Length: 310
Image (tube, rainbow, N blue to C red; front, side):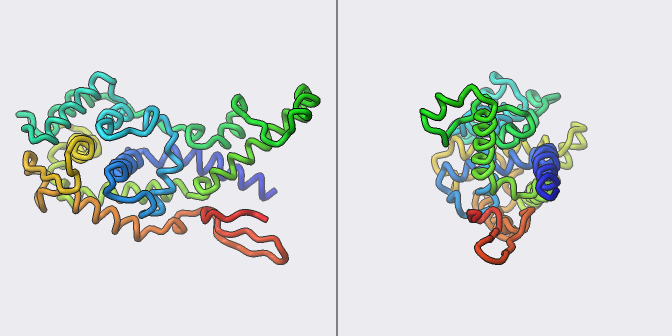
C-alpha cells in the first residue's frame, strides 16, 4: 500500500541512506558547527535561515556531531575535533592552540596546517546513525522501545492491563506516532538533496575566501584530501575565533595573512555569504512532500510548515 511504500522510502531511503550521505565529506558538521558558533555568539539568530534551523533542531541530539551536549563558547574547537575522530588529549591541545592564535599568537613555524597534520592523520569520523536523530526510526527499524512512555492510559487502566500484549502494543504504537509527529519536519527533508546543498556551500565558501590555491598546495604536498586541510583551517581559525575572541565578528586574523586575502575580518564575508547562500535555498526546495488539499474537512498541508492533520 502507499503508506508502507512511503515508510520504506522515508526510513530506509531517506533517513538511513541520507545519514550516510549528508555528512560524507564532513559538510554537515562543518556547516552546523559554524552556524552553532554564530548563534551562541549572537551574530546570527536561530530563525534567520529556515533550512539551517530545521537541520540544527533535527541534529541537536546527534552524538556523532556533538559528543554529548551542545558546545558552549570555549568548547567548539575541542568538540569539533573529537567529532572528527581525534582523541580527547589531542583535541584539548588543538583547542589550546586555537586559543593562543585567537589571542594573537604566532602560527607554527611549520605552517598553517602543521599542528593539524600532526594529530589528524589516519583519524576517522564517527558516522551519523539515523537512530541518533529520530526516535521514530529507533522504534520502527531498530525495534527499540526501552524508553517508550505511556501518556494515554489512566493509572487504573495501567494496573488492569499492563501485563497484556494489547496494552504493550498500544503504548509502543502511541509513543512511536508521538515521536513521528514531533519529527515530521525533519522527515520531510530530502537528505540527499540537502547533502549536495551543504557540500556546495563548503566548496563555494572556499572560493569566496580565496583558500582554494592554499588547499590545492596542501593536497599536493600531503597527498591528503583538500577537505582535511579545510577542516584544519576552519577549526583552528574560524571556530577558534568564535570560541576565544572577545569580538568574533570584528576579529582581525592578522597572524594568518594567507587566509585573509580579501580582508582581515573574515566573519563579515563568511556571514554575508552564509546568509546570501541559504536565503536562496527555501526549505520547500528540499521537502519530499508537497501541499495538497482534499474535499470536506480532510486536509493535508505542506509537511514542515507546522500544520496539523485533521
